Structures are given as structure tokens and as C-alpha cells.
Length: 223
Image (cartoon, rainbow, N blue to C red; front, side, top):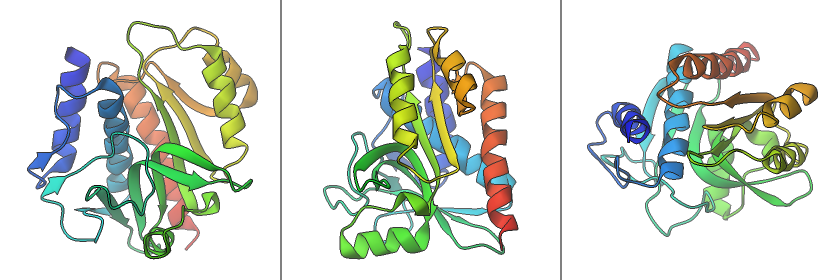
């Protein structure tokens, strides 16, 4: 399918020197979609001056990149899950992850399909086996991959409830499909979203990447 091959092409470019991965063009669409949005985050950070390093759980260089294909804790040792370290010239280092749990204001744990958080927080969580605090999350992105069915408004309502429990200013909802009602719901609530996003819609990808760039620009301006 063109959309799967397009997502995999973007992912493989982002992996660079990581010559192997547990994903491929034949992987489940939702796993590829989350990884593809993660690559947009990395590109946005790079365009804002970040040096990107792909690492294993222990911080070593990732020559074989292992993505989460189901949500798990950032401290999980089930596999040698990998992530990206984002280093800006004058701001604390960040990490970009796929499929981790984050602790909300209510102390309830929520899945973040793509999350960018402070590296200091991530290190503490790995050392102490706790979930990251949402106040330490810079970007939290919900990703929905649908090809043959429409995106129901209930998913949108669920997302609105989720972001009420997460501090992050950079909370986004992205999907491949729309029922025609979810975008109206989000626009009324003035929430960040991108409907119809895929490698087959480059204008939407550029627009979303630009939104991520603003988050990273504002982050650096604090320091």
C-alpha cells in the first residue's frame, strides 16, 4: 500500500545509521503511523537546531532500533526499547519516545503514542521505575490510523478528557481519517489537531511539523 511504504520510507530515513529495526513496510499500520509521526518530531527538532542521537534504553548508540508496538513503561526491560535524544545548544536535553505511559495530574497513567520529555525526568523514571510526570512532558501526541472506517466523534471526546489530565502545552491529535465532526469538535475547543495526515498529504505534514517547531522554538527561548 502506498501509505505504508511512504511511512516506512520516512522512518528508515530517520533511523539513519540504525541499520535494522523491528518495523518494516509490512508492519501494522498503527505502529508505522506512530513511528512516522515520531520522525516528524525529530525533523522539527533538527530544524530548530537540535542534534539527534538514537539510543538504546541504556543510552548506547542504537544500531538496531526497537520500537514499542504496544504501550509500556519507559522503564520496561521487556525489550531493549530505543528512543531519540534531542540536544539543543542552550536548553536541557529532551527524549522522544513512542508508546510510553505518562502520569497525569490525577495520578492516573495515560498512554502517549508519541511523547517528548525532559531527559532528566526520563533518567529518574528508568532508575526508580516510575512513570514520567505530565508536567515534564513537552509534547504528547495521540495518533489514530484508520483507512477503511471513519473517525468517530467519541474518540475526539476521549482525547479532550485525556488532555485535561496532562499539563503539556504541546498536546496534539493526529489521524489519517475524519468523520467530519472531530475537526469541528477540536476547533470549538481550540485544540491542536491534524486530520488526514499521512505521507500522501505532504501539506498536512509540513503544517504539523511547523507546529512542532514552534514548541521547540518556545522551549529554547526559556533558557
